[in-house]
Length: 422
Ligand code: SAM
Image (cartoon, rainbow, N blue to C red):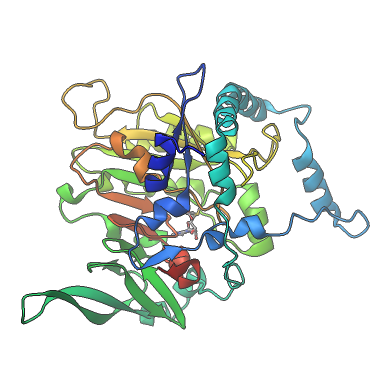
């Protein structure tokens, strides 16, 4: 099979741009494993560990004899394509969906028509090296540990490899082990390659140039840089939104705690933004009440005007959607609202970045519950300020080089069970 230039570039970058015929919408397919592997020299992410959800047995359809009535009602409601008698909020949500639908379908059609890409997607989970302890609950529960009275006493020991010049002038490295308080302490990985951390019998792989703060929301202001030119140019926020879906899953599998939506008004987004400008990305759910709160209160309070909507459309390894596009309570897509802080969006001249224009559809195969695809490469041309950009993720569960990751479990996906040695 002849490899197209786009596929060659995809193999190098993990981003595959698709032409969507008949619309001005941009579309791209992302391979998160390839994107993340660009951050590591000695390790690589195990595709089958990243895509562990693809190996889960299909959801069991309840047995009408034994299923509790509440669960049966929820299941039936979630299976309905379009509920009758929508309330006012649901009608607005449905209208938004109808507006997005043609874009989503065209983007998906362009993926399905691309036989090179489809073949690549089907191979993404090849290799049966899936480690059994992914999702088995052996990993540390940082959320719980962080709230224990012992939290101030927990330490992580990190082994950094630092450059060292030998007597004959040749370059080598020294391994240095240092212990740090695990919670409420900003830790930076300054080393020649990835560092390795040990905490409570688990091993963690930390990318070079990453930085993290594991703390509760109450300590989020510890992130505010000492000087404003150390502010961030890309700010990604993926809040633990309060909504029925997460509460329900939390009750079933204790995934993560949620936060009252109003608390987010206190996130110091303005103080984190670089004075030369920042691109802000906010992941939201499809609930209309939340969308209204975000558009009317939250984004204005952070100084973000006229955000652009992006969609994350989730596909399976055969390229099909993970669910029916029209299922009212379970859309196979999520939205991102993206806008600028400290940037005059009317002044198009003289800037060192491209202003975002119009909606884009991002497609990828989803990893673990709520794990989002990495966005820096896709958005790099739209990020204002100095290069390379300074990036931060709020409510993070993993680390990236050049990024600060904050949340109550930013080491979650850095557990060595997700990695193999190169
Ligand atoms: N962006 C992440 C990813 O791609 O894997 C998912 C983030 S998830 C939607 C929200 C995160 O916020 C969870 O890790 C959750 O534990 C964390 N969180 C919940 N309450 C928090 C709090 N009070 N302080 C800090 N983090 C919190």
